[in-house]
Image (cartoon, rainbow, N blue to C red; front, top):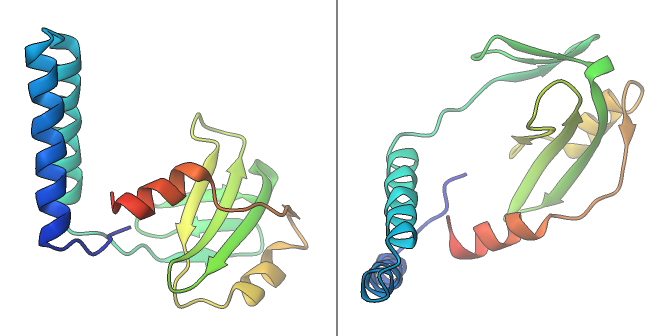
Length: 143
């Protein structure tokens, strides 16, 4: 998800980053300094490429993510929930069984969450959940 960032965000992020790196150098915490530099490098690499829009389809047997040629059968989806709070967030969350990243997030801006719920509910258990703290923090910090 791309969040809008103004000049103030970049100024504050630079000040915080330089502060953390300076602290690491002054206290001879080389691991902290290297870890933070690695974090900055990975963040920069991930956020300086154009976001892809993937076409996702709900079929009779599961969910197909077209561009990745990925298919998630309903039998591998334990539960789902929809977090819909426009204009801030509109996500379909799937708890799947087959991989280490057990919660998949699909952004559904522009889609009717009720229609999506009606398509999924006959096949997968819906649960009520709120937005997770880490998602709230990421959105607040615009990262």
